[in-house]
Image 1 (tube, rainbow, N blue to C red):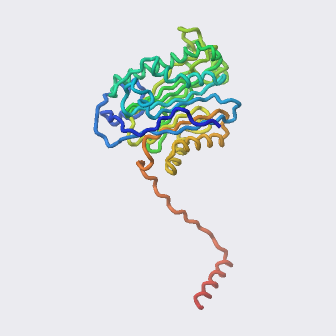
Image 2: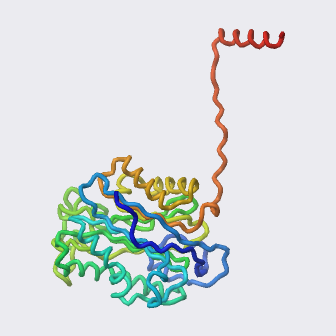
Image 3: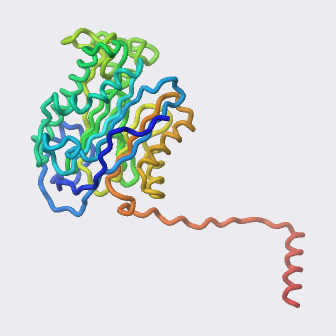
Length: 360
């Protein structure tokens, strides 16, 4: 088994209060729509905290190709060089293929690639300008990471990795995804997908792939790859500067967190191959109600996927936004009544026994 990620900064802190003017706008949206909304400061009773746990397992595979990172307090981790809102966190899952080299490279260099090399925007205030700059920076980071894999002689051109990152600034959750890892938010027990799987069989991805000269064979891009977006895999990509059927461009989803949002699950496809988003949310929610331990929940989720006969490596991060005692209580269970039938002979025997007890 593989232990949890090396980088963990655990700290519970109060977040910057931010909300949409319209409550209806707290539903999931693409970033291009969310940024049109106006963010305003407000005094709200909701004060979320971030704490996380993770677990990874090689599964039935011969090699472990997954990597992940979790940083609960990004400001403290990066130090005084960066200026972020008081509440800031960063999480990532990188699911490698064609060997572990690409995922390992991204994990080792993730801070440089995602924050230092792209001049990541800095501010203590969360507004729409900052969020737009963050999205642009993340898109640039994905593309630079892709090019870095092409230039590194230690990474084979047949090695690649999917990448999903989640950033939290104040009450804003921003997920960037390229590949088939998945982020799922739990809102009052209901699963809300915060990413879209990039598989070549899906209509939008198939259309893009075929327009750029690629083809789908038995569900695989060019008969080789099960995802249509990934970092690396340069033996399947056209030279730098050319449009390719396989791309590293991430898609974004953004959410304003409320008191109804309990936790986030980030997992590789080994989890989602054998269970739905709602099944995973329900399993983790039951666990948190029992012991309030996100790391144990991550382990339980991996063990359940193994029980369901997943055929891949397994990596899960569970990020909690509040402790379980802030959630709505579960409805009390009604006692179960069992009915049974007795034969006529048994009824006569019971009557005789009761009559005997009464007479004595």
